[in-house]
Length: 289
Image (cartoon, rainbow, N blue to C red; front, side, top):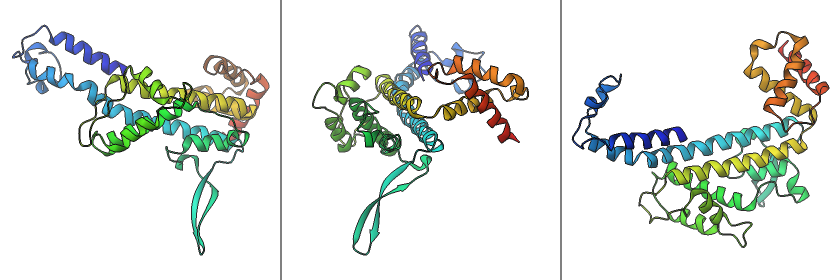
């Protein structure tokens, strides 16, 4: 995403040295896609000027999709280690509606509740612990509402986004989602009237990336804290196998390779010992048959 933004800036700089009526096909005659360049430099400047906005329109929903998948995989790790993944649901009865908690597949948990489900599954809800920062969660809800306007409302403004922006304001400096968003995006979110096109660009995209990364880091810290050593060693082994499937045959050297891989790729998992990786290697080989 960053590379695309940089490429846009380079293109703008290159075109600044040419006349508006110059043809692109004459400026780059050797390009394989030259048949698509039958435009003037002036037309191209207008197109490139909107490239940052168009990239943000596409990349913000995509970033939320990746974050959703990452959080679902974190829930799956908890489930596989024996932690219950549960949600509250409403069930209709003869006497009315009744709230009940039910088990759910981690990949079926919606984005709107996945952080709360993670907190419940990890035991933080019962213990009264805050896995996720309050300001970051308020900023995330703002991002989620922005994603909805981009993906489902044609990038048009609406009252829901304005309401979420107002709700992001905290009672103090530690839960102020508005301040966090403004700091990350380098500007407040532009609230436009209903039916008017949203004003988003690289600032809003970078804020989205940063907020999702912070929440994922918080989930990772919680996983490292509560998952069993066996589960963590198994995660390392599976990751190694997915990257280096051709290095699994030599069982005698597999544990040593896993140990080096753990130190290089998972330096924070210091509580995993060589014996744990040996167990994970044996378990992985047995699953392979």
